[in-house]
Image 1: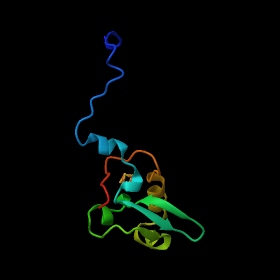
Image 2: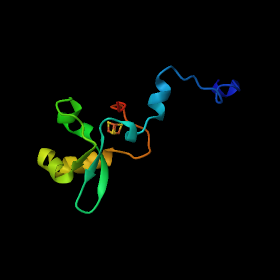
Image 3: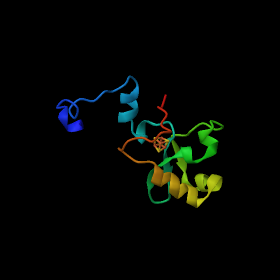
Image 4: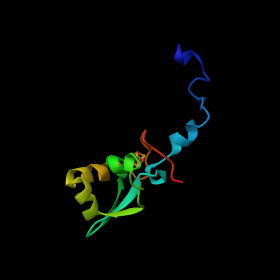
Length: 98
Ligand code: SF4
């Protein structure tokens, strides 16, 4: 029956507040931070650390890779770098920067 309605495919209902979430990217998220390495800098998602996710510590704009490794280890650092997706749609934990 979907094909019978000519307007169905071309019209979408967007609820209030949903548009911001749908167009949000990691770069606008409060958990997005730049990790400073020895040779290169990479964006990472600090929501992978409970310390930042719970608000126990303020999310910094940038963090040295050694400090991150000291806090959580190399595996978590790799996961945090992999999770932050530059330019693509934000995840469900998205929280707009203030
Ligand atoms: S992965 Fe989610 S929580 Fe992490 S920076 Fe992107 S939107 Fe924010």
